[in-house]
Image 1: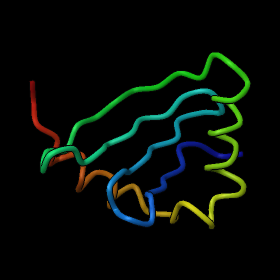
Image 2 (image 1 turned 30 degrees about the vertical axis):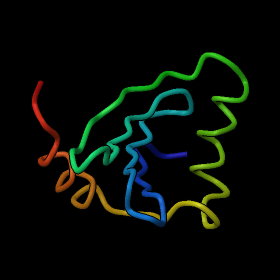
Image 3 (image 1 turned 60 degrees about the horizontal axis):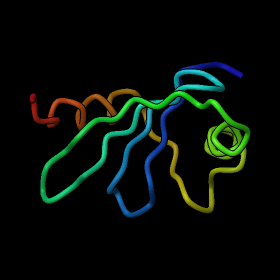
Image 4 (image 1 turned 90 degrees about the vertical axis):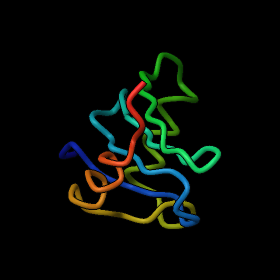
Amino acid sequence: MDYPQYRKYKNNQSYFKIKSATEFEEIKLENKTWNIYCFKAAILPDRNYILDMTTDYSLYWDKITAEEFDAILNQVDEK
């Protein structure tokens, strides 16, 4: 599988950059503010979540481009 891969929830509230089979970034809309979270999978359910995002994603996620992800990333509040 090639990385990175990009996804978003169908409700446009979270955007994902899947960096590897064990690591992803999530940009999430919370209280009208975009926040970013970095996640490393340490247990099987977490790795399965990443696997679902990359192989069986059509029910919950849409595939997006790096440019779409970067456009949202530019809106993340610096803290």
